[in-house]
Image (tube, rainbow, N blue to C red; front, side, top):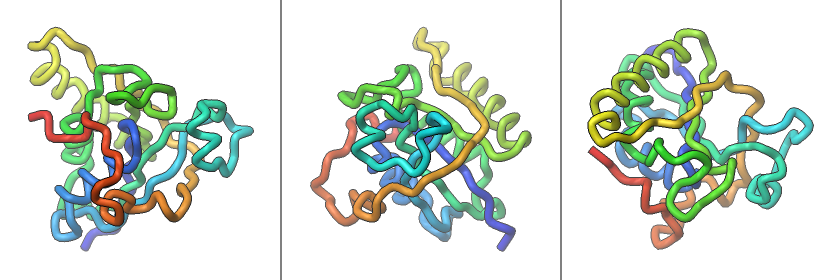
Length: 173
């Protein structure tokens, strides 16, 4: 096994984001560990909780932190799957979930991740969105501090199979 790397994606409600990644990338396919949590908000909004993030007051996004084995799955493949598994053409919205906490964003940890995210975004835009006349609006930003969400949010849809899932969290191609 290679040294694990970290990828962080925000694509609406973090329950569905985690559920689709874990279903399609079990450990044998490279995703070793996941956590849902909060990132990307105001510096003075440290250690936020779900209620505060949902209010929109913190500026944080609901996001998924993935620990992955780059020998089994590349960062580029995870970025492409991120685009494939939600609607990256809506700013601050996925389905009925509206607000900056539901924005589409890739939080990068290294200059190499940022370059890969930009390259894959351009490729996905040209192949899947330009022909439809739509534009990817996902942010690509440097990751800042990460806070795990409360325990009951972790693996929520695996523990609560009939729980709410945003209809955009599906395979779009």
